[in-house]
Length: 341
Image (cartoon, rainbow, N blue to C red):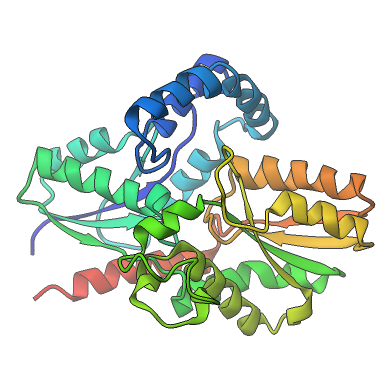
């Protein structure tokens, strides 16, 4: 059999909480045309005149509140996931970040140097979005083509509705449902509405047809919102969560263009004003806790909720090192191997 390797992909983090490191990271991240998808000249103007002079300092302060002795929580958890998976499969498992370190080009260089002939490329994004899943895959595929085109690459497809993924989510969520709560918010990372229109191959369904997420259509294969809605529905069904206690939201808005709504921070504030006292928040678009969950939700939304009259907001941790999540990844690696002729 040919020599195989697994490459896990995730977003990335700054090297440290120092402002120059955060600025360097944000420059790489927001220079990606699949993230800030506007005219290159306009992107350069927005980035250099309106974002990089101000945002790095604020972001550095936010990162400082969640930084650990091992560094970025996203990187530290991703490394643990890599190691746990490596202990379950009979092949090397590597980790690459779309932005920052460990950088994908260097990781693929190591895979090539080790003599791998096949790669199982596993983006750790349950849902398809051009600013996460797509950009990570494109970069990795381009690097493979540049460094060793003969390597065969097999791609893990978005797994937002995979029963084993839903079972892992349920396993991680169920213990927290034993607590008293009034609402459970499903908070997914936000994207601009234009991203949905761009990834709709028909350019006539997403955000155009009434109740587009529930009308069967080929666009759903690359529709981020449909996939988020479906994950929520499947988890609610799996755990028998009362529908009237669930709320779908999107977080992390950037800029003034229309983004998916309702917004998480606005929603928790509204619920607080309406007399809701206890909220659980789950973030299924992330498989590892990171700045967006630990600082934006567990700290920022908690403060917003309490200032609006709420009493308790609790973040349900991401999958992180959940055994059923690691088993899911290991099973997909084994299926890849067993599919070989």
